[in-house]
Each structure stands twice: as C-alpha cells, then as structure tokens.
Image (cartoon, rainbow, N blue to C red; front, side, top):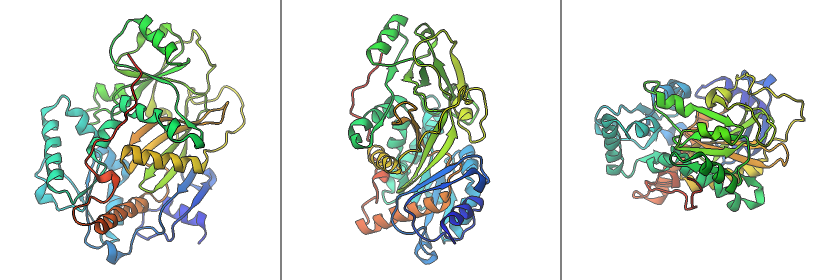
Length: 411
C-alpha cells in the first residue's frame, strides 16, 4: 500500500487497524483525493512506528475530561473503540462525581478551558477545579495531558502573545516572526491608545482580539460570543470602539490562506484553511469589520471577507523545516503536547508569521489523529516507565508554571 493510500485510509475510516510505519517529510493530499474541502499537508516528525501492539498496550486506562462540544468534535466514541482494539480502556471522567472511584488512570487527557474560565465567577466551577487539582496532586504517577498551568497561560492572550513575540529571537535561522502587537489592559483615553499604537510600531489595519482566548460553551454565554467576535480596525479614530482588556495586532496580508498547525506530541500536521482577504496597508476611512473567528476559518467557509478582490499568484507552502523548528520550540516554551498554531505567509516577504496559539484544537482534516494521539500516550508512558516510578515522564506532564519573561508592551 503506497503512502497516499495510508493517508486516505486513515482519513476515511477510524477503524482500529494500525497503519504501519513512521513517516518523515511532507506529503500533500489534494482536494480531489479527500472527502474534505481542504488540502492537507502532513508533516510528521516522530520516532519510528505508530501505536504499539495489543499486548504492549493492554491494561492501560486513559481518562478523558472534555466538554460535551469537544467530545463531539473529537468523536470520542470512535476513539474509545479505536483504543479498545489496542487493549486500552478509555474512561470518560465525570467531574461532578468523586474521582478516586473512577480511577486509577495512567493518563488523563483534559481540556478544562470552560471550567477554568467559569471558575473566575462561579463557585461550583471553582470546586470542580479544586477537586480535579487535588486528585492530580494526590496521584503524581498519573500523566496529565496537558498540565493546567500550561493551559491557563494560553487562555490569556497577554501571556501567549509574549511567548509568540520571543520566537523571532529563538528561531532566527528559520525567518519566523510575529506581527507587532499591543496589550490594552484597561480603558484609556483615545489619544494614549493612538500614541501607543504608533510607538510600538503597529500599522493599520489592526486586528482586535479579547484578552480571554476562550469562553464558556455551556450556556452559549455572552462572554463566549464576545471571545469569538474579533474586529478589523482601519483608522486611529475607530480605536475609540475597542473594549479592554484586549490585544491589538497588526494585520498582515496573506492571500486569504491560513495554515493551521496541529500538534500531537512529536507529530505535527499542517492544514490549509480560508482566511481574511488582503486589505490596502495604512489607515483609511473604512468602517470597522466585526467577524466570528471560528466561522471565517472553517474548512467550508465562504464569505465576502475571505474572497480575494484581486488575482494573485499562489504563495509557497510553509517550509517543513521551519514548521518543525517552530513546533519544537513551542513544545519547550509551553510544556504542552496538544495544541495548535495559526500561521500565515506574508504576501510581500514570504515570511512565516505566527498569529495565534490554540489549546487542544479540533484537529479537523488531520489524517491519523487517533493513531497519533494513542501513539503519543504510549510514548509518555514508556518514558515514565524508563525514568522510574516518581517521574511524570514528559515535559508536558509536569505540574509547573512556565510562561514568558519578556516585558509586556501595553496600556
């Protein structure tokens, strides 16, 4: 079976059959080959092999702690069946019930973003979070993917953008950069904001994003809708309409193409998505554009905001070497294994530009996600066994707070 058939088989089916062999390099799977509406670049950088044999995996228990929406997007039921074929028991953790009787767990895979955000103002969510943290602290041999402190910093765009801003210095040879940005901490007079935009080297148009990078999904709250809502600001006068705390980021023309990099441990996948079209550089009298970030970058997205007004040559795809270096650096900086990175290619300089980092993304359009995730779970458990009973086995499993040391730029 050739390489392309391997990809297509894993995309079209979530059967429990192991796809043989580790892959290196990059393979393009075109729209005509796939039952999805996007082109997929697969960039796999991993140790040899997929999931281990049934006997090696047998008896492992993996807990999943996800919101209902995340559970559906991941198709957790299918993953449970996939794992069962490798002798791995997947348990859905109920945070409202005592955790000890639900265990023990070799690994817990969690996305508690909703609970973390709600805990800021809801006592019940606070107690759920305390209970979960107490269980993890009392069971140090359980590997947590990913650690709560690491996840918490990505919920705060002030923190995540400071990490992004350091990439230029740590990845000089790869020509990776991030757009200039400005933190707006609280309401300030318009002239102060305008002056800070100029001082920090931002240029119009500007993207405005909320500080909180995730909102509660449980009640379709106003907070969640606000988090999804971003704006494109075209003039200094329109800055009067921003609502701090927020981040202002220079918009970079990129040919309406977004490259979403999905990371699963040592593997990463790059999927092409629609994005915002090009706009003339510099201030103009155009009214502020408000948009839903999820809707714009969905695989099937089609709107005036993503339709180019001009014909332009296709931009080169991201360098596989640069993406690999970016992922390696971010894994170290974040201490995480399950995250996404949004990157674009500057139409003028062809520079790889990082514009956002996401917690445990949806992995839509990613081939071999199930086998990659199971393989990573096995690899961290193998490292744990090799290191000894007191080790947690991988950088992303440690319960420590990382984070940037760079000084913030903002008001």
